[in-house]
Image (cartoon, rainbow, N blue to C red; front, side, top):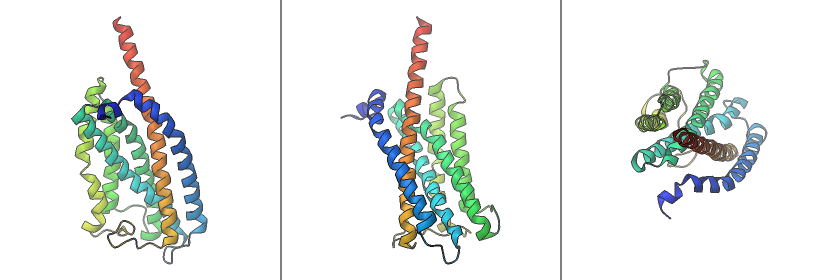
Length: 241
């Protein structure tokens, strides 16, 4: 099966209807289990106490902020290189979801930082680069809708997504490259996670739940965009008749 067949909007609409209910149900179950395990079953941290429970929302949100931007950049590359409209639709559908995850990561990070650092915000390398990530999401959405011609808007926004992707490794490795207040990596390490298994399990469950939630939500948004473009095309045909 060729890439062009896989990228067919009609084929996407058909298969996405099968995937969406499963992704939604699994996301709901994983998030419910993860929240229960994180808030009630996992131990408090010996230094941070119960404040550490913010981690079960903050860390998966931060992971998803990077994941969504990566998905948006890959989709934008597919649109620019292979001229696949479904790839551009996927990028447009991902942008607001990624922006929400990024905003949630910043908000929960501030709630976590206040008792740990004594302030809601510092111009730390990690915090600042995540804030830049939020601006990139917002800039992508603004640029995509800034043109009367959706094709021009899609191309301009796709270029911005690819240029802005340089910020993703900066966010990821900022705690290694600079002396920051943010704690170092404790999960994705070459020598294995340093976090207690009782805390790691609900954290990974929440990450899985957030990922499945993204899948379900991006399908809904892509379906809406596909239908919107079909309606616009029919209106143009009717207007020219």
